[in-house]
Structures are given as C-alpha cells and as structure tokens.
Length: 129
Image 1 (tube, rainbow, N blue to C red):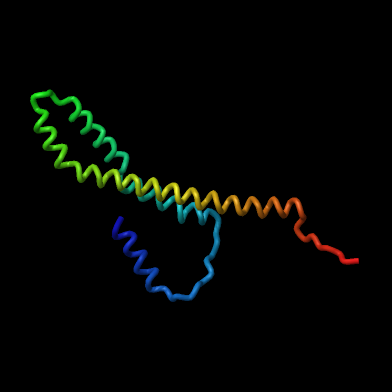
Image 2 (image 1 turned 180 degrees about the vertical axis):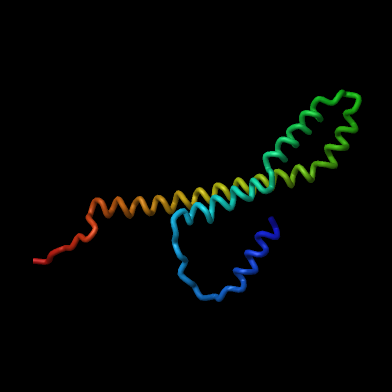
C-alpha cells in the first residue's frame, strides 16, 4: 500500500501548480473516495487480522493459572503490536467517517440547490413596472 500511494504523490508533485479543470464523470465521487478506502481495507486483510487477534485473546484468557507469568510476559511483548493495530483501525475508521461526511455535505448542498430551483423556478425573471 505504501508503494501505491508513494507513486501517486510523485505524480501529484510533478503536476504544474496551475489549477486544471477536473473532468466530472458518473460515479466519480464514489470511485475516488469510497472505493479507494474499501480496496485499502480489503488489501490489508483487516478482517483476517481481527479474527486472529480475537483467537489469540481467547487463548490468553483460557490459559491455566500456572502459566500466568508466561502469558503476562508474552502479552507485554506483544502490547506495542496491539497498540499499532488499534491505531491502524482508528485511522481507517476516521478516514471512513470523513469520507462519508464529505459525501453527505455535498449531497446536502445539491439537495438545497434543487429544492431552491423547484420552489423558485429555473429561469424566474423579475419584471420592473
């Protein structure tokens, strides 16, 4: 995934600083925002990681009392990895929420425009007498 996005950054840096018009196409918003995030989640196999972490937690909790010290030692060693995993999930959840927030805001703006057009008319002219 790092290689995927580092190539994108290089292309963006090579572009001129001028603002070029972006061609709008059907499903453009969905493809650029939502599908990229979904593909990142699936390529990182987050469900599989979560399932294995859950399985590991069950093993730790079902360990007999005589092995408690060894389990604590292993748990303390794997704690940084679990913290990284937690931060990783928080990042993706934050990105997902931000993506949906942007799409909802854009849909709200479009809805207000169409409501105003429907209530006032498209080419409503005012006559001065």
